[in-house]
Length: 131
Image 1: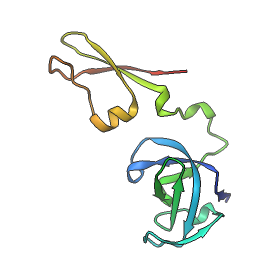
Image 2: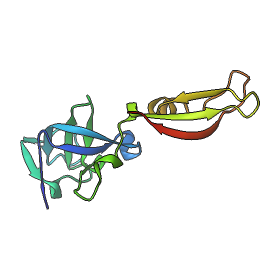
Image 3: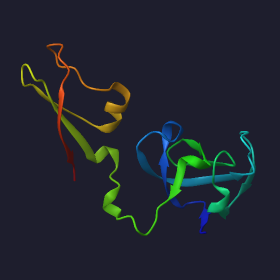
């Protein structure tokens, strides 16, 4: 298995591993945590040690996570397969008045399906990837 090092980019899922994947950079690694919030700080470790709650990983996005919330970026993944949230817009339309609105993934994660000013749930139309 490969080695995880400080400054490596990883795929991170917030929300206890339930959120959409995002790319983040590792800023610190603690192993042998066994579910506690403290471990032995190391500069690198085998990915075999990064599982469950045996590791705490600090990230450059001001978050920390358990080992089960990250995974390596593999060579089989195309770089274009992961798009930063700020480059994604979802278009929604009101079925009644046809008003359209565009929201990013973080807005949708925090608020759910948008409501129109006329109090109708909007309907998802499509997603745009911005340049």
